[in-house]
Image 1: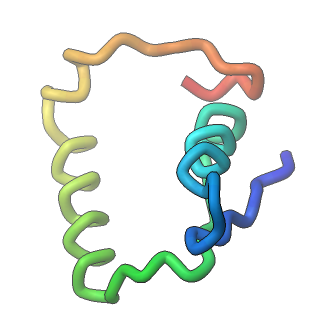
Image 2 (image 1 turned 90 degrees about the vertical axis):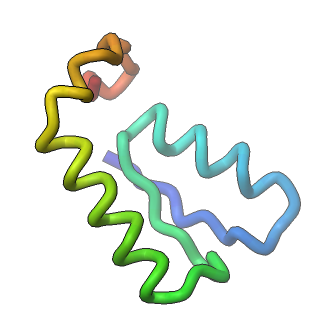
Length: 68
């Protein structure tokens, strides 16, 4: 699997970010401009979402990598 490293300071970064998420389910961000506290809050929000039943409200989408 080839996970893209996306420099968030370059033009078109948002498209590269979405593309690597769609193709692999992962992304490595460079120069995101996000502070550590914000990243930790985001991770906490995702954890709570994934542990909740709310996640079942979204349909799975087949991707080229097989990740849904």
